[in-house]
Length: 149
Image (cartoon, rainbow, N blue to C red; front, side):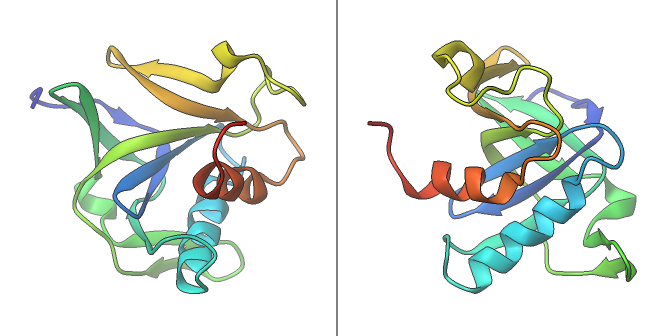
């Protein structure tokens, strides 16, 4: 594993075996999407989902994969708008399998294949760009439960 791994302004939720890394500017809805994924996992819409980290996470390369960990001071904490900072179950690390970019300038109705991937620390990962104002949860659920035609 690379040492030190950079800290990034993002949230992450482990869904099944892999994590969804949620990026975007402040106020874009990263915490909301993280909580929505956790609730979708609890309701059976998607595989079991548990928080990795909210607001700030650390990324590191592990072989040809990206590992995500919570920032130590924020581990197990998530912001719920209207309730404040709350404690919840979390995992200490997960492998990133999908990146969601909120308020993405390059989001399109029918995106070309090159927009549906990103590279982090030299590792290519599937990506969903979400336009400002669009609800990200249906897109993420669709990506997790369907296959490309």
